[in-house]
Structure formats: structure tokens, C-alpha cells
Length: 463
Image 1 (cartoon, rainbow, N blue to C red):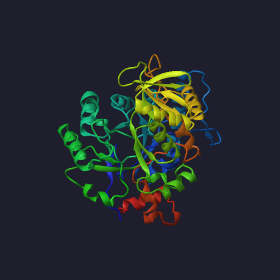
Image 2: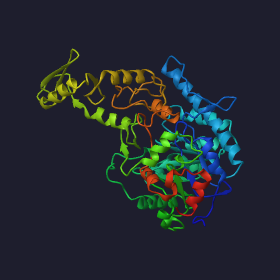
Image 3: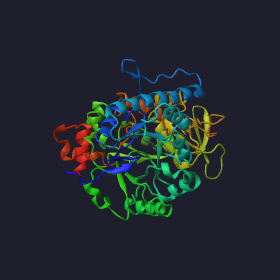
Image 4: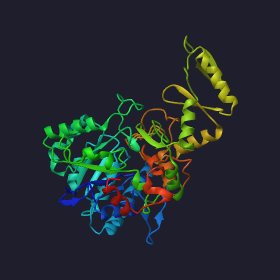
């Protein structure tokens, strides 16, 4: 028995269940096709998606360009070709049932160019475009050119109000829904503002009510709000269903679809999900995007935490505060007196390289880690519109104008590696904060891994 009723989107009745988009070859046609076939809204990530060769095998992302700009163009082309292949696969699997969306990280370098290239060749197959991680002011204009719906991702009513008044108000008919993504509970990149404390989660209900009230004033009472982040089952959200204060509501599931038979992630990744405990997902600010993001605590995250912890402020000139001289590899720095002993301890422990950050601080790393950081910065493919790790920017100078930040990392490299069978311990592994529930939910007892159809049938019952 289902506790939810279908909802009408784009002239079609679908279940109010959306598969959350997960970038770099994770949300694929193999998983979104079955989700749509089961009556929901499947989502394909348009971020560096996998392309197939004539035999149906995945084509690796092999960058050949000698310059960052050349590699950036390759990356955009990978996103276009791969997403087109994934959409076609989802369309074939779903046989026209349900709906198929594509998800774009707005801060992807060349995101608008990629979307144009994708939508030009997938007409009649794509229902809508979901965009977050930034303020996608051009989203409605772009969607209207191809007659598809648009779904902005926001974490506050204020953000949507700004988008609407500045860019969306003249294209109201194609607004498919507004995704409220909880900045404390969602996996991946989150829209946590500078005014919000990452350690003090807010209650999503009043925030969504605020969003709905703003939408009502704008004549958008009929447009559904999609609750994303922290949604494990519908039984815990029953007060939201058929709630007049909230209006039409849908639910997005990002973490649970990772653990299905159709999910393309590796067995070691699925096994790791099964073994997570409460607190094993960390909300942190290491991403080169500058956004907070939630990922599984593992060796990769621990190294970033420890790397950032081996940090002291410095000055190039001696003054009252920075009065103590520190010499590292024949370079002289002035530091606070109490910090010199810390630095000498790190140097003695083998962290022999001192790297400057944009904040006039030094971090201390081992020689092999320093070499890895420098190589990754050199090999940058320009995957972001602005990258604090490499100082790449998608502008005329291809530079942010700031010093590259060695406290961050190459996000394209690690996400691509884990998506294609790389180590789950030594790569960035995004997950929502409810991922620990795989180990406690009886549905997954004895290591049971459902099909997408079985998962949706379970969700429909409330569990």
C-alpha cells in the first residue's frame, strides 16, 4: 500500500519521488532509467559523465591537452558526450515511463556550454534540468530555449526569491519545482551560508514553510517543493504529505539509490555503506569549490584534516607579533614564538615541506604529499568555474588571481577514480548524513541489496 499519491509534472503523472543527482559517473542511465521506469523522476549527472564505445564499454577520461584550457575543453566535451549517452540509455530502459532529469553543478567550468550541447541532442528525452552549487541565474533562460523544465536547488527562501526576481519571473511556466536541499544533512556540496553554523543543524520545516510563503506571494503555490537531504523513508515525513501549509511536496533520495543492484558504484563502496555508523559522515570545508560538503570519514578526509591542522600563520616581515624567525629549506619566515616549536616538531616528524596558503599561513607536508599536490595542480583540467586548489578560473586569464590553496585537493581526480573502482578509503566519497542507516534498516538485513524497483516499492509503503 502506498502512502503517497502521484503528482503531475510536465503533463505527466509521476510518483513524487526524485532520484538525487550524484556527479562524475555515479548517477547514470543504468540507475536513473529504472527509477523512471518505476514511475518516479530519474536523474542523470551531467558532470563528466561516462561515454560508451560502439561495444557498450565505458570510455575512460583520458586528457591529452597540454594546457589547462585545452584540458578544460576536453572536460566539457566529456560531459556533453557522456551525458547524451547516459540519457539515451535511461530513455531505452524506462521506455518513456516516468521522467528523466539531468543534474548540473552550476559551478562546473563550462556548465552552460555543456548544457547547450546536451539539450541540443536529447530533445523529447529530458524533462528538466536541476542545478545547484551556486546561483544559477541563467538556468531558466537556458531551459526555455529547449523547452525543458528547470529545478533550481536552494537552501533558503531568500535565495529563491533572489533567483526569481532577477532571472526567473518571465519564464514561470517552465519552473518544474524548487529543490530545498538541507545544508546540514544532504550529501555532496551544500548551500551552507556564512551566517549559519555547520555544527548547529536547523529544522527544515520552518525553512520550507518560509520558502512556500515566498512562492505563494509570487503566484507559485501550485509548484512543488522537493525536500532533499536527510530523507531516508517517508514514514518520518508523513506530516509533510498533504500538508496545506507546505502545499505540493516531493521527496528526493540521494543516498539510498547508491545501494541498489543497478547502482554503478563498486562492491567495496557498497560494502562500506553497509558498515557505516552514526557520525561517519563529515560536513567539512575542504572542497576546491569553496562550498561545504558532506563525505564519508576515511583516510582521504583524515589526511586533509591533519594537513590543515599542521598550519601556522607567518609574515614576510618581522614585527611585534611575528617576531620569531623560522627557516625551512633556506627560506626565512617570521612566526609567532609559540608556533616555532610546533613547526620544528612537524619538520622532525618528516613533514619537511612548508607550503604557502592564500591566507598567509604555512602548512607542513611530507615530500611525497608535496609532490602529489604540485602534480595535481599542474594537471588541472579546469573542471570548476573557479578552483581554489589550482587557482584556475573559467575567464580570460584562466586564473582566480589568488595563490593556489594546498589545503584543498583536485576534486575531478578523486571523484573520477572512486567512480571507476578506485579505493574507497583514499578518495573523496560523498554521502548524506543518514548513510549509517544502511546498517540498521531491516530492509538491508543480511547484506540485501535491492533493485531500484524494489527500493521504490519499499519507499512507497513509508519505509
